[in-house]
Image 1 (cartoon, rainbow, N blue to C red):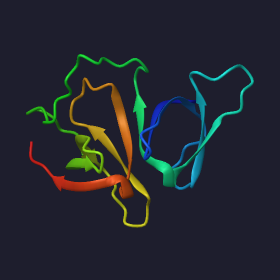
Image 2: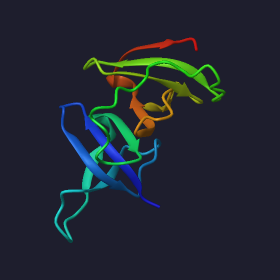
Image 3: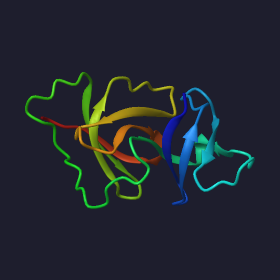
Length: 135
């Protein structure tokens, strides 16, 4: 099954589309971009050029929605509660179930259950700060 993803690259470029072959263990993956022409080859994304990969519910999102940066009092999501700030200043709050030293990144599930992001794969080299946060 294809994942709906929004790739944020280190150079500021954003690519929306579907990916069938993303896995954290690989150095690259492909995106069938939304704006591509029929029979156009998928875009090759090298993980070293990636800031983060957002797995989204909807490509349009809701620009008016201000995502909460705190956990609900009754939130029982398993994992470490983290505040993650990227080098470009973007800040996310969520839970991480596995942050392994040898991997290029880690998955973060947003604290706000109404977020358009189902999960985010954050690339460690693009993160300027990561702190544990309370409820």
